[in-house]
Image (cartoon, rainbow over all chains, first blue to last red):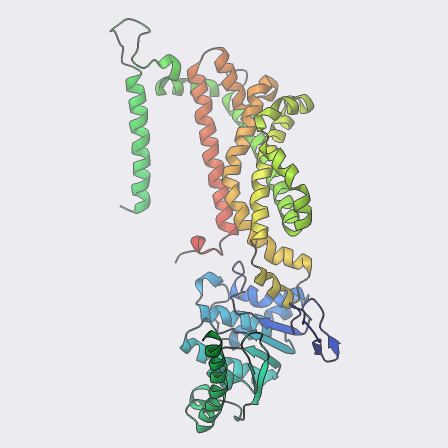
Length: 211
Length: 271
């Protein structure tokens, strides 16, 4: 809805005073759940594609792509085709491709859902570090409670279908965060316990319906 | 021995055995010394040695229309028919693939035209375009166009919507989406149609030549001429030449495919 792919059934989405209607607004970046890296482009040209669309001159494009590749730790893979990369690396390319055009709002729809825990934690750390540089607004959809607490300032819990707001919860954990150390802290445990309880209620509702 | 060499060796072995058997079997007389009575009569299927002799003769300057000239005419018409068919088929596939309404409107006409046996078109094409190069190119085109069109059309329909969405989020306009998402994605489908297309272009051309007579030239003309003189050897020369042309063209396509689709895992460069 924020991206303009789906229209709201009632009400409207307003970004900086502009109502979102239909097509994707130019200042919003979207990282999909599915791997949407273009398989026919090399890593470098995948990251460059958004700059190409915007008519950024090649020299400037090269510079920004090189920077992005260094940031994502993809050095040496500039000319590799996505088919030769792991899922984590491909998602990193997708993330850098979105970030390199510098969106003000970043929508992420379960971007790390298909990755293993190790890769996920690494990408959490990278995402947090990247975010510290620009501090964009990020809307991140996840089913993973730890992921939500690790990354978010504010967690919004949705109910089961028809998906209404259940709870808006501020995560009071200091930044910058350390993704490993964080999970050992008492604050993390407290946040986790509180949100876990709320999620549990949703499950109870589910059982109630089935019985 | 490497796997490649082993495969090559087997190929050659099969060729040698087949040619040897052919030469030998067509040389055995049913009743000794009585001329014309063979177990397998070389009159109908000729013999490798005779074919080789005729091949050399037809390549020489003693004939009015030499074999290389005829082969060139066939290759030329085939390539033109192929190029025109592929480019128009690809363009039509892209356009109709992106415009579902238009595709639905045109669907019955496309199916009807595609179900026409192409050979039934030959008299009409001859009436309109005569016997020459143009008629052969048109015949090849009528076949190649549809093969490429249907595959490209399917390819465009099969493009992953999420790739299109993500391109749009990265700021792509419709033309940019076409160029950077739809075309490269559909190309894989189009290429699957190209190898059969070369064979079908050759069919269209040879059918045209069978009817076209000397003004059409080509290997198809050599075949009808040989039928007129009941000369199996010349006919075999024409058939072998057509087979060789087919192989060379198919290999050429494969090379281009390997280059353009090098992002696909099956073409990934090794080492």
